[in-house]
Length: 352
Image 1 (cartoon, rainbow, N blue to C red):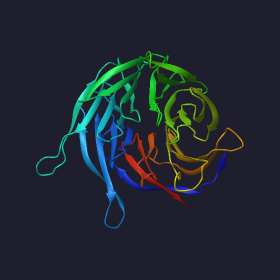
Image 2 (cartoon, rainbow, N blue to C red):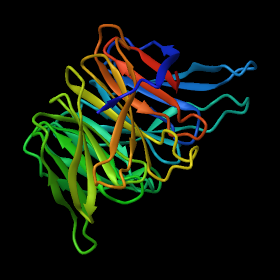
Image 3 (tube, helix red, strand yellow):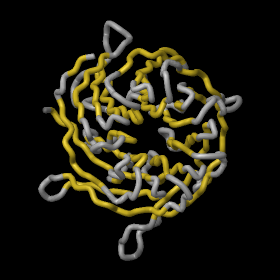
Image 4 (cartoon, helix red, strand yellow):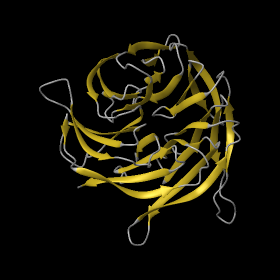
């Protein structure tokens, strides 16, 4: 693996306010909003914009006391950016929408428009499909649920998938197709699709990790899937058939569990390089953020990966629970992390 620290991560903001660990964060894809969730059962929404001198500033927009009875473990925005889903250890999923501004122009409150019940125990992850018409959730009850998003904040369960043998840690939708991936304490990744004649089903199982699969991230072009694990590695799976994937790369270097992985566009579109696959960030129990640039290799089905940035002690001595690239144009060099220190931190990647 090539190591060339051609880039560095510069801290842009440090966002406090949560009283306990911050488990997950999600950038709004359409608006300048960032959501974070915590063991303190709240969600905090931060807004960001450039001040008069061109400096990027983050500030608290609101704090939502979700009413969840236990930890809020995951948050996800709909593609339109108008709806936020929360997954909680109380086994429920909250669907949040903002009320219209009042007569004085003050922003409306965020209200719970729907509560999705069905999981038997802790809900671990929630994710919207690329069209926003489907929502996936997963739980310690070993199931993955697929919900259809209907008008007026109504949801219909389209399938309960009982393929994993242990706690399901994460769900992630393909960026353009209705293909769903899940990762589990059973060390496997399952891939699901909808059978038009029948129901959602598991079309393949990816094995290779030697311990819990904590997180998943699809490449921007949808041809690859990244997975991070308790086995201290990030694996890159290439889609080689309609529902066939094979592991083509293992990224090593973390000293402890890798709790989070995010695949951003990197320099795609900015550089005329058709082989550019974007940029992967990973983080976890060793407190180090690692960033790799990935490229297709014309002479092999194995992409090349170069470690371009490494930042130790990003949250001091604390574990990093989530790392996520901003998906919005003009902000795709921003990375957010959250940790057991109760902090959300914003980083900007730049050439050294």
